[in-house]
Image (cartoon, rainbow, N blue to C red; front, side, top):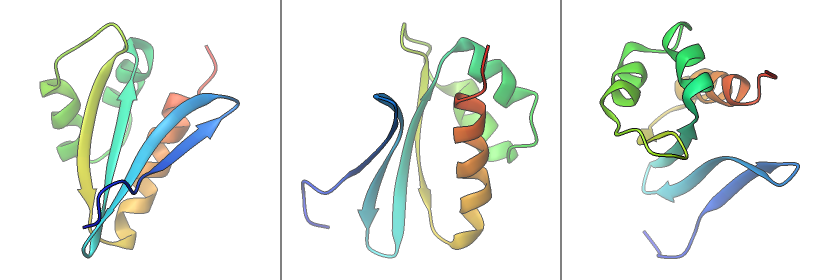
Length: 89
């Protein structure tokens, strides 16, 4: 992997997630605030992602996780995380 490559996904100056390329996969990093975290825990996200958020240390910005997306099957979960993060209050 070459250092310095990252895709920052933003919407109206709000950071939604980070995508970092690696050999044969993409690393996904996302931070959810407390409201979005609660929505994620009650959603149909994969159990592994819910477990990562549960185990993540809560900070003022929220709970952050980083996981690898090895195939196109990971796209629905990533889309669901972005939808949860952008759900209006």
